[in-house]
Amino acid sequence: MKHKTLKGLQDILPPDIAVWQRIERSARDIFKNYGFGEIRLPIMESTDVFIRSIGETSDIVEKEMYTFEDKGGRSVTLRPEGTASFVRAYVEHHLYNNPAPQKYYYMGPMFRYERPQAFRYRQFYQIGAEAMGIEDPKLDAEIIALLSRILSGIGLEDLNFEVTSIGCKQCRPDYRKALKEFLGAKLDRFCSDCQRRFDANPLRILDCKVPSCIEERKGSPPVLDYLCGECEDHFSNLRNYLNLLSVPHRVNPNLVRGLDYYTKTAFEVSSENLGSQSAVAAGGRYDSMVKEFGGPDTAGIGFAIGMERIIPLIKDTIASPSGPDLLFCPLDGKAAEKALVLTEQLRTEGLWIEMNHESTSIRSQMRKANRIGAKNVIVIGDDELKTGKVLLKNMSEREDAKSSLQAGEILTKLRP
Ligand code: HAM
Image (tube, protein in one colour):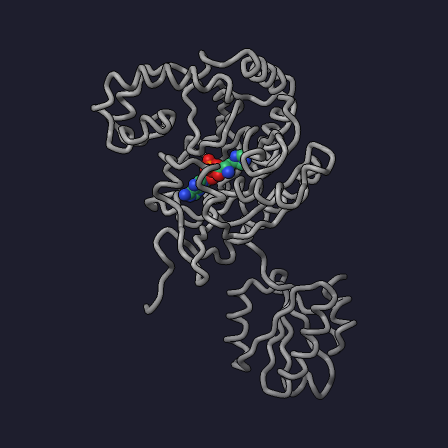
C-alpha cells in the first residue's frame, strides 16, 4: 500500500457514518429547543489565539499543538479545541451586542498531537456549545441539563456527571498559595514537568498523569475549601438548580481541567466503559476570557462532547442501513441507456434508485442485488425494450408485479 492515514487519524466510512449523522441530527434538534444557533469556525487560527487562553503551561500548548509557519511566515495552529476560536469570533464580530445569553454550537474536527491509543486520536471531533453574557448559575444548570439531554437523546446511559468549582480571580491566589506550600515541601519527588510548572502554574501539577506525581499529590488541599463567598454561593446555587432539574451529579473536588481558562464551575461526564480515556464530555465557565481577548467583561460557559468517545458506547444499538428501493439490471447497452434515464427520473421522486453498470448475466446481477440489499429489482433486456413491459421483483416477498417501462407506473408499483 502506497499511502495510509497518519497515526492517530482515521477515515470514517459508510455505514459507520450513519451513526455520526444520527448523533449530529439529534444534537441539532435539541440545540434548537435551547435556542442555540450553529457557528462554523476556521480549523486554523493564529497561534496566539490558543497560547494565553488555554495556558502556556498546559499540556496542549506545551506539547500537543500542530503549529507551523505558513508561506507568509505567520505562526498558525490547527485548533486543538473550539472555545478559544469561538471567543476570538465572538469578540471579532461584536456578538456581545446581541441580547444575552448569546448561544452557539459547533461541530467539527480538533487536532492534538497526543499519544494515540484507544479512544484518543490526533484528529478528533467535538460537538461543542457556548453560552455568553450571563453570570447567574441558572445558566450553568441549563447548560449541564442541555448536555445531559443530548447524551441521553442519543441513548447514552450510566454516565457519571461530576461537577466542581475551581474559584475565580479573587480566591485563586489563596488556593495557589496553599497548594504551593503543600507541593513545595516535596517538589523533588515530582517529574521535571511538574517542577518546571511549580512557579508558573502549580495548579497544572494536579493534572499531571505520571503515576508517581499522582501518588505524591494525594492529600493536597481541595480547591472547594478555598472558594470566596461569591464562588461558594455560585456553586451551592448551581447544585440546587441541578437538583431542581433532576440532573444526577456528584461533586468531585479533585476534578481538574487541562485548560487554564476556567473560572468557577467545571464539569466532566465520564463512562466506565472507556478504560483510561473515560471523559466523554467536559466544560465549564470562563468568565475572564472575553476580556482577555479585548472584548467587554463578559461571562461565558460551555462544553464539548468527544464524538469518538460516545460512538463506541452506542454503536451496538444502530441497525445496519437498508439498501436501495430499486435496482435496474440491464442486459445490454441499449437496455442500460433506458435504465439510466429511468434511474434519474425516479431519483427525483425521493427514492433511492441504483442501476448496474455491468451488463452481466441475470444470475450475477441478482447476486449483486442481494449483496447491496436492493428491495426491488427490474431486469431490462431485448424483450422488455420491445414490449415496453417489465417485472418488478420484490426481493423480500419474492413476488413479481407487472409494470410498463414508464417511470410513473414503476413509481406507483413501488409505492402501492
Ligand atoms: P476538553 O476536556 O479538552 O475540553 O475536551 C472535551 C472532550 O473532547 C473530552 O471530554 C473528550 O471526550 C474529547 N477529547 C479530547 N481530546 C481527545 C482526543 N485526543 N481524542 C478523542 N477525544 C478527545 C474542551 O475542548 C473545551 N473546549 C470544552 C469547553 C467548551 N469548555 C467550555 N466550552
